[in-house]
Amino acid sequence: MVLRIKVVDAESLRETVHAATPEISPMVILIWAPDYLAVQSMITLKCGPGGGDDDGVGENFSALLKMDPRGFAAFHSTDELFNAVVEAVDLHAVFAMAHDSDTIEFSQSLEVDNGLNEFGYLRARFDRPVGGYMEDYLSLKIYGKCPDHMLKIADITRDPSVIPRLPLARLNARIFYNATTLVSAFSDSIEISVKKDSVSLTPVKKKTNPLILNREYGVISTREDIGDGGVVEEVRVTVNMAYMNIRAVTGIAAGEVWLYKRAEDVALLWFPLDAVDEEDDTKLIKGDIIYYLY
Image 1: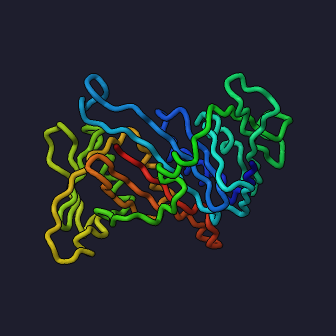
Image 2 (image 1 turned 90 degrees about the vertical axis):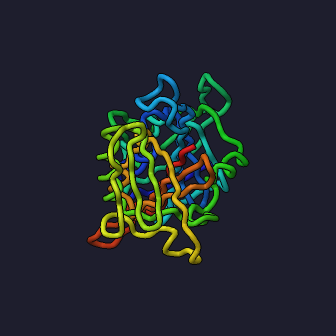
């Protein structure tokens, strides 16, 4: 049960993990396999009467960060699939200690009783002393594990580039961030409406005109561009921006965000990640961050 990675750019890695782990998600699932390293954060709160500034709106939320081995200088997993539920602040501490070119080895340690269960600790070992400690490792208490079939249901073990439906819209990530920042000043909850060739953003339950993105500003494509000539109906999605760190993810995104609607009550905001060192074309981060809104 060992994952060994060599960090390319520690700052980009920290920003990526923070983007996928909002403050209101105290626990996260760290998952690794031979072909990816993933962090799944889950929030099971739902806004309702007395909860938030838009009573009765809101969505349940989860975020998935899935990083490709190509974003590391070295990547080796001894496991087909391993996962551990840990505190988000502990995982942040590991990457906060990381330097460029550090090797970090994650492994499960059962030598010490964690006082909670039989899973022990997740040990993150560095190739040098870390922080103010003489030791070369940090220990993260394992609060539990998820059955493999649950991870598969949650899409974690799938290739995130494979999805049965085309996006409702592909948007410029930077413009989308600027637009949502402006609209969320009126309301955390935003209704996103995708029409034939435009996307509008409206604060929920606030009497303001929608902010409209079009081909000249923000919209890369909609389903109209790849349709079969039939009528493309307007589709509405409500998202709660308070859960998402759009600013952080925009800085590491590949320049686009994709909007999906999988079912009547399931929407996705999908940010492909492709951070590259412009001087030597080194892949700093490669993968995806997907925000699920239920």
